Amino acid sequence: GLISIMLGSVLLEWNDLEGADHALNKGLEAAKLAPGLVEEIRWMGGLALARLKIAQGNFDGLSDLVDWITQSERWSKEQVETIRTHIYLLRSHREPQYLDYALRLIGERRLEPAKAEWDWEIWDKLIWARALIKQSRFALPAGRQPDLQSVLDFLDAQYRIVEEQGWVELMINILIVQALAFHAQSKEDQAHNRLERALTLAKPDGYIRIFIDEGPCMALLLYQAVQRGIMPEYAGKLLAAFEVTSKDK
Image (tube, rainbow, N blue to C red; front, side, top):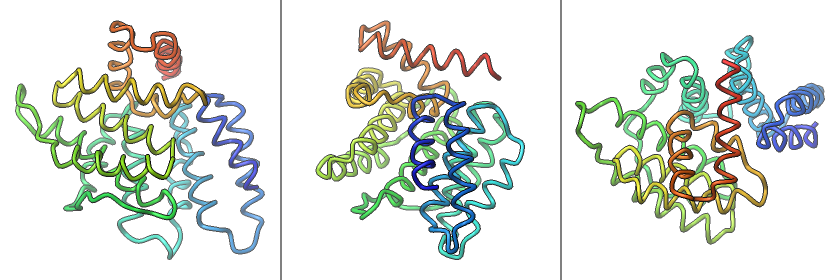
């Protein structure tokens, strides 16, 4: 079950949705038969399947799936809120009302860099950073730029930690969130500097959905990257994947 879930997660990242669907469902069915299902497997497989459903525009059973992912005494209230916020943010690209649901879950959390033994705590903080960036876009009158300096300070410090550990996927994630934060402030040069670094790290392993899951703002940044001559072949490939996703709506 774990092997199939890991395979499905890779296929999902490569945007092979059909292959990911088969592998993830096979893996989760096998995992559910095991006594004492390991919570990390529930989280990894269930969240990958939720991302897949949203990518497919298939919301049937999504709420039940999220309930199953979070159905554990091990998860704290804050962790459950993070998982739900992540799903709502992803879903909001197709159904805008879910952005409101995500923003309602934002509390007074402090974004401090984490030195975690596994990536849950860092992933958790990056979801809240994304939510704060989204919130900043809608909380201010038109024309005013949000103050995201505390978010950027956190991202800089967290990036240094994961870079030292050599955690490439988290490095890509942080660079993407930095690009979105700078873009929200209309600091396009800084945004494209971070995006280019993310693309450089992502290209060797063929990352796709890590960009697509960020929605329309990332599509705009990639379009601008092509215009600026920033890795136009790879950025163009990602844009093409965005266009296929849009046609599936």
